Amino acid sequence: MPKPCQWPYPEIRIAVNSPDTFANVGAQGYPIFAAVRLGTLSELGPNIKAYREAYRAAGHLKEGKVYLRVPVYIAETDRQARDEPEESFYRWLGDQLEASASRPGARAIEQRAERGQRLQTITYGEALRDKVVVGTPERVTDHLHALREELDLDGILAEMNCGSLIPHQRVMRSLQLLCEKVMPSFH
Image (cartoon, rainbow, N blue to C red; front, side, top):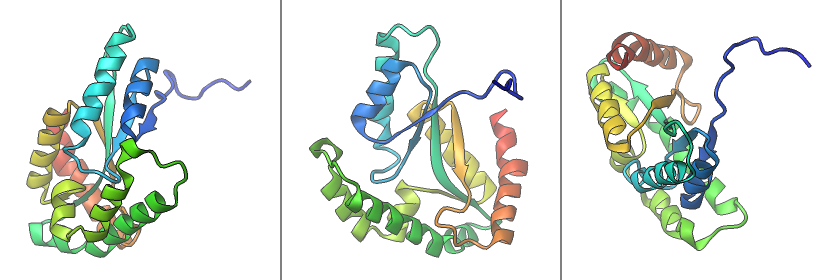
């Protein structure tokens, strides 16, 4: 068997979405990736709390780790940050709706029909408020700090081209702003 190239090797993190999965994975002791797919950023709070409670109740020695996977877009002005990714974000929302409708085994607890209806009627303003992080470097920094505090996060996985329609040059500029202007405030 080949030896790992990286030591210590990267943590295994499990992506969670449904409320019962948060608690189940917490009891197993794994770090998690939480994402906003059908719900909103603020709706993650109770699920993350359930994860942390199950983690502690299972007797794990360390604290459970929670990473948020969220679409992020940064530009020099708020208007650019709102306008430039709009088509791409709508494509992403459509993909979420389609995945939800076609996924087998829907459970009542997931409130799939209600959330699917919300996705069908969501405005771009609601998406900007509840599902993504966009703005100038300063606004994004503030938003990420607020999310870290509100949701008790250990890290962020930024989806820089959610929907895959943002031109490469703009994605790279957004990434540059993230690395140079936003990330330093988190170290």
